[in-house]
Image (cartoon, rainbow, N blue to C red; front, side, top):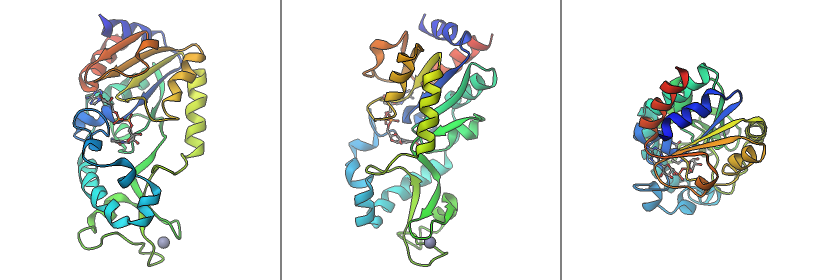
Length: 247
Ligand code: NAD
Ligand code: ZN
């Protein structure tokens, strides 16, 4: 009876906040980093996703990124993303704070989306700062690897995502923690909750008195503090919760 219980908790929420991780996009065909079938069973994260290795060898980074970009740009929101947009539309959550960089929350209609790890939909020049859509850069990767800035002519381009060793976007982090401090319900979806400071957001919300719901395929270190824990697929569980919540 955990789904009705989660819906009951959300029905009374006035300042609910969702925190999402890679799991919410798994059913859209984007591999997670951790967990079964996760990308990190294939790659060493520090080698492919740190700023130091990017700067030392952008070609290797882009070889992995090229394939992931192809998948992510073609991905469509799944029923889990849509359910979160519905929960916002009926006022049960006020925002989605996400660790994802795929832009699928925005595509599904979520209005207030805080991207803690940046966006994979854009690419920036590390020299002149020019921003280009990822889709345009993706289209020329067949002839240019690694891609270079068409504006200043030489510097290598980097997706506007936060790599290991890079600071997180300060404004997004501040907004996320403010939301957590004022949340009455925190709904955690598809996150292994081992990446800090993102994993700190539920802790801040709990300390401020929020009730916690966890929807994740596998157990998380935070399950013990949740009022409701649902181990399942977010694309199946969230629509059920949203349906019962808006009734
Ligand atoms: P993670 O990969 O560490 O963990 C994902 C969690 O989701 C796992 O615990 C897994 O059990 C669970 N999961 C898998 N499929 C699920 C499903 N269908 N429904 C519910 N849960 C499911 O993800 P993370 O904690 O977000 O941290 C990894 C970091 O990697 C993120 O910070 C993000 O920046 C980046 N990342 C982003 C994307 C994306 O944009 N879609 C994808 C992979 C990684
Ligand atoms: Zn440039």
